[in-house]
Image 1 (cartoon, rainbow, N blue to C red):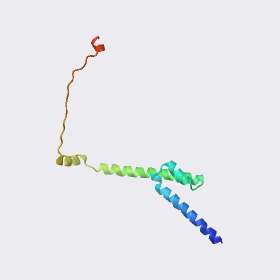
Image 2 (cartoon, rainbow, N blue to C red):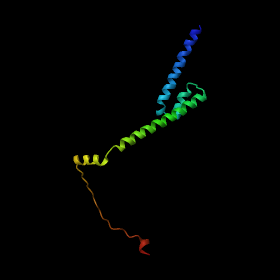
Image 3 (cartoon, rainbow, N blue to C red):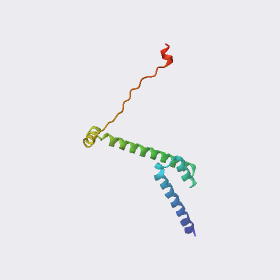
Length: 113
């Protein structure tokens, strides 16, 4: 019978661990409030919840930093003058403008001075 109680606890523990792992992976895409609500359903101790939320915030910051650095690196590799020159070779530029000259209306306060 001891084995039956052990087996009944293992699926609950395994399911909880799966949920915590899934929350950790998806934390980068969740707000703190939604993550707190998701983890709150599991009735975790406050210390563990705080640790998970802190880890999620750190992971989110690391991902944002890495993505930003990668984008900056890619942008720095672009030779904009070369790319614009290639674009200009294959495209024609057409600029149209309309200019209208209007006489100013005299303001009475300025004419009295």
